[in-house]
Image (cartoon, rainbow, N blue to C red; front, side, top):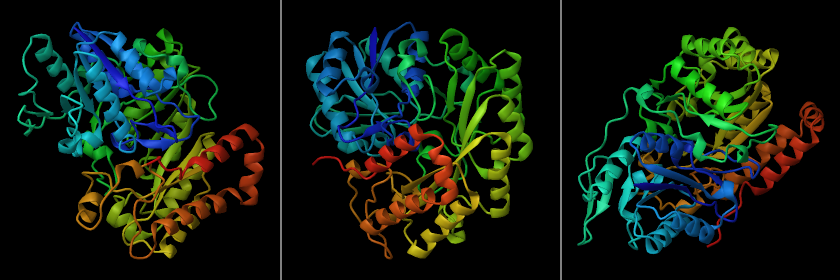
Length: 470
């Protein structure tokens, strides 16, 4: 049968990247456009089953909701599955309802937001099912049922609504144990030339070489979507995907989307050696990881294999917050400083991910984070507002004390204050943190060397706190 997978358009106020924050999505730099790699993984599984698959990426195609609905309806689908995000959920659901009205297809949604708030998603009768958690095998089994004329009910890993209105949560589906059994993502269904990353010349793509993270930071959505256990693709399987995107699709820039890419040093060394052995000498890549998993030797090996940028979870400069909320992954600040220095020595740019607005955080604690960033001296920094996404330990801590508006979950907009700072004061502290970082004389000198990148960062800063229209 024919299946259409949809990455809905972003809201008009800002670009949304739905794969970030563990699938809850996040407002991003308007110059950033990641491919919907989760949908491409689902598509690869469906094609292996013999289905005809189309991916409609509305942002890449420049489609508004009406245009996206028309494009999907024109395909004559038997089943449609839409991605979602917290901050765009209302618009995503409206598109799903429009598609359901315009076609005879079964219509469902996937993503972390709908996984952890599935009941309310059925209000208004806009969808037939929710795919909870890891989507590949659940969507495969749904397609098997739809093509054979069976009801969707009974498929592990979904939530659906009976005719009488009752919501049915089918049993959880186990996480995929052997990721090497999955086909490569179906990049041939994407407009690979459309995707871009600020400061990178030419198209980019993303790769997920592992899933899961045991650190269980209280704010993190990745452990919800991927589990608390690391699951690694073998170096050979990762290299096969890199070879496909490099030689078959002509792509030269890769962003690894693993929560902590360098968890196993031997695996990363094997991937780096394989990149060079397979002749991918023009490949340039970046990753996200933790300070405690890096050293000068590994950074030098990564740089030789094309690594140009590493994003590192710093989160907080306060020891109490590190231990309570951040997996204590930055317990040795001298080690952290050495890693940032070693990266610069190896020719790898660094970005520090930081957060402000933890429940017990005072302005002074936030100042410790700002001071730590000054000490580490990364090439870039990202300050986010602490956000209690549904299902996270942080959400469980705060649930019952406040109501959450999903539309405000942009990653930068403070949802609520804490006992020490109001929401406005948290956002003001984030603005202060950016100003203090980029106004330092040595930082200004670096930024002025690349006026185009500086202009992009200013544009991003001006859109960070933009609100959704009510």
